[in-house]
Length: 461
Image (cartoon, rainbow, N blue to C red):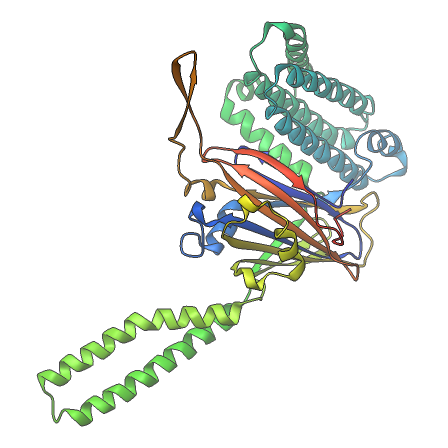
């Protein structure tokens, strides 16, 4: 498995996933090359607003033994463990199971070919059925342990049913796969019957979509306890920005005061000319004060991280990792040499001017061991391209063709290609790179594909 995976998440979003172990010191940079014809740049897109509204992340403990090892070896040895340890292992399994099903179902929903869709759906149903059976085979009998198990079982049963029903509601229409369709529906009905048999939810809750949805959200938060890391975000440079504002104001006022003294020397006494001159001076002060402050702040902020994040264990509150985050537009001349070299490999027709949006994240993981059973932490970061899509033009062109004297036309859509270059550095290792091409239109991402790197540049393994 590569160190970092980049893939499409939904119709207008992509995400990268990676894992980090104890003591890791990792710097990851993503460079989005946005063609200028897209109309996206520092003037039309505010970096801070984009960060808070369109970039979302999830950081949690991760174990490579996702399914069978957790169920059999850890649940089976209940007598050797405390209730808290059992709950941690249970939550880790349930959370990773839910994330895996969520990821698989989203990828499956993007398949348009009926044969490929139903084949993948059948495999997903078999996996869900087998894992739920293995999970329930180790149901504890002790009431203190049983309540935690029932919460996880209730949520996983409902969640799997919902993901499958959502897939079936969007399934390609074809009568050739009715058997596979019936099999998936039968699994959904079986899970519904299972929850009824166990009396996990009251009739009032089941009859009200709002109540059942809110209950499952609560169960998911309970399951995430001890697995999803607590995040403490902090905006950096607040004090420095205040000092910059004060310095810029002082510089402007120095110039204004000098002009006022000069004006008073030219005009004797309080005259209309003096009043008008002072009005003009103060007007120019208001015009240029913000520009000077912003220019000075951009100069000082350049290259500095904008945010920091501390990740803590939700049970012990001990720090697990610290991150620094960058997000800014860059000039092409400011790019690292290797990134520029990778970009030059583009085909001649793709060598167009572009705005460069840079996202960087530097993570230092604690040297202390994680809780038993946790081998690493996993970070998933989603980038929504919807703010980009709002600037794009809709395709209105037509392509004409002639056949046997008849002229017909096809409507074509306007597509744009975003180049994405990843740069990864682990500790003192050499920098590694990867390049992706994201093809999109106004309504969806068409394709995300990885491209080859020039010779002599180390690829991300």
